[in-house]
Image 1 (cartoon, rainbow, N blue to C red):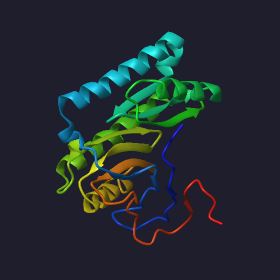
Image 2: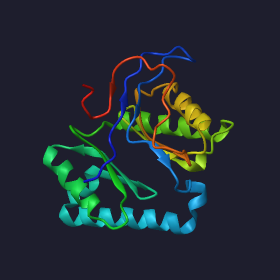
Image 3: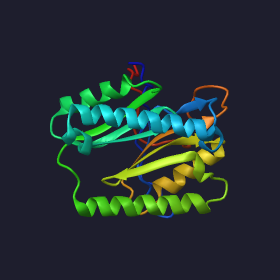
Image 4: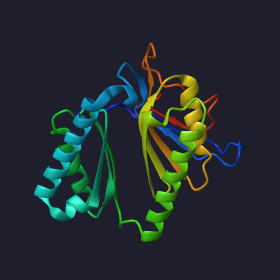
Length: 214
């Protein structure tokens, strides 16, 4: 499986409008693809078709599995979330996703634990709502270019920033929103000349790239 390497940055608390949540840049980078606002009806239909195909395979395998795992698709990139009791189930679901036509990559964040409580679900929905409102009103950020969801206080976001400046604005919006414990980002910067993800200035803490630093 040709997954993007994961780059994790553990940041110390930053005093902005409050304590900043850790921001994890997972597989981001440059992209020449069109942003969501530009991809048109056909792109949306493709994502919907991929989502439906994966969901059908999950339901065919197990109706219980179908209810335990959430599938979200953005421009061919698949985000898997949910709660299962057996870690092998997570692996099986990922394999199903990879075998689906049109899938460019799969981000597997299925957790092996008990399902979230109703209170957690309500809090997560409220966090996502607050973030969407912020994105709509923030100057220089096009909310149409992003998909986000919150699970147990962790925000997962996929999308395409028009510039490095927009990327930085998005980071601040996400990391400083009340209730957000962590941010896992799959945001690309449109038309960057290389595949280097822009980094926060002088990040403090541990940087992991999935490769040995020796």
